[in-house]
Amino acid sequence: MTEAEKREFFDFEKYAQMILDGYYESRNHTVDRTSACKKYDCIIDGQYKVEEKFRQEEYGDILIEVIQDMNTNAPGWFFETGCNYLHYVFIENSSIKRFIRINWDKFKSWCLSDYFVSHKHPNTVISPRGWGLTVNLSVPINDIPKYIKLFDDRPETEQGA
Image (tube, rainbow, N blue to C red):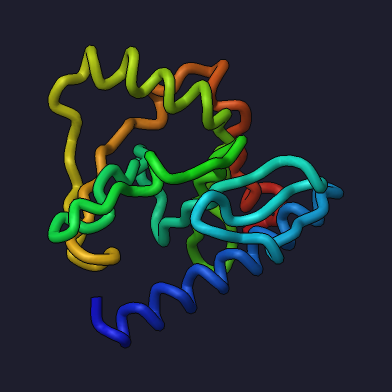
């Protein structure tokens, strides 16, 4: 990843976090990013560790980073996160197009014991724009059971966007 790509990535993430913070606050949640680390991105309401993933267009899947860098074989966030919840957010035109809240422990367990067992060849998305050559597995949002996908919101309709 070039320095320009890193800057673009960090700028988008910072911008997306600002939008998401407004979304949290509009729903009377507190957001703490002061202890953000490799294990989670923020703490909501003083107790819930959240991993946030942002995409610039809405797709019908969630990308799970399983290898962060193929050259060093560094594990992706799927194995590194210590969150309670995954917030997967599609942002378009300066607003949240779709917000999905997932129970992390249930999702990870379901992926490893059910989904990837029955879907032996999931769609793989390899990105040269990550922290090296990154390997992601695609999980269609509609395949995620409701007991795992706790919340699926399209707030742009509420905001008139």
